[in-house]
Length: 473
Image (cartoon, rainbow, N blue to C red; front, side, top):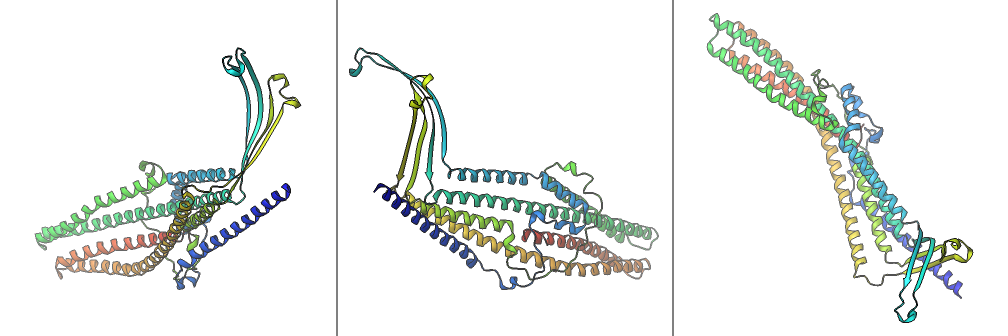
């Protein structure tokens, strides 16, 4: 009869375990489907495959710029940046937490070795006037184990595993962001250096024109107003140089932080050459719908949803009874010499079923909290998807329009150069007022700066596109 009862009990537990596992799988699938249904991607994103996305760890998109300095900076940043090092430590921490959760599935064994000595009082009723001394030597291995019959411990272990995987994706996201920040800062610095070169070249040209007006004034062919106006334009250009130098220094300092070093360590790296890399490529408007789901931050959000779904399943399984098994095996003897004899052998086993009937609604509220956390993580995932869509669309639009702007600005610069040459030649011949020369100088400086800014902006838009896609192209 006892064997039949035990067999029936085990059968009921196994059936309940299968039912709970099936319920969780159904809920987990519903959660996964809910994420996809609640956050549909635009239809036009399912057509075309202009980009071939790769994982960030395998992607070296920046080498398309053929810039050895940029390659070196990114290499140093990936090895020395403090955010990357911190993300690596977070991975270690999350892995340890996962291992701790896994260890709860295994029984716990403890080894105890002891000796005790006790004296019984002679002034108590049972031993009146008879003092007694007692001593005992013992050694035993004890075991405690919570059998995870309904999978509550397993689900918590699974949640920690998903959180560990989310931490790995967060590390990838840090790497994506770091490389993008290094490239953006580098191109911004190169753009500022190019703008500095434009200022100095225009200042040199304006100085020559100032000398021409001074010579014409000395010869009586120009007025003092012409000299004053030429000097004003020249000085206004020189006045912009300190501000541009401050901008260059700020980008250099920002780069030093990204590299985990001091600004003076970058001297000689970022001062040579002023020309921006030339990189103009066609851009497609169609992106596969699954491309964005490879972004590390989106994958991390997905893992967070899965972890919260597992925790919700664990709280539901906490409603079932717990099977606790404890026991020990060892030796005990009053004398050390007979401790390990067969007569000193001891053992104990104590299986216990524990079922919380009432606990102040703590399980109800724990399930409600887990469900709210899961719903919040789903909303966070959907928001990240929308943000990703916006970032990709903005970067694509910005890059495409910057290319059109560069073409127009190059033509504008060419025409302004011709305008300045013609107006200066006519002024030398006395056929046009000096105001035309001044206007041409100002216009040329303005459009040359616009061109440099558009060229730098197009490179930065490409970097932003890389970052928005979570990798490269």
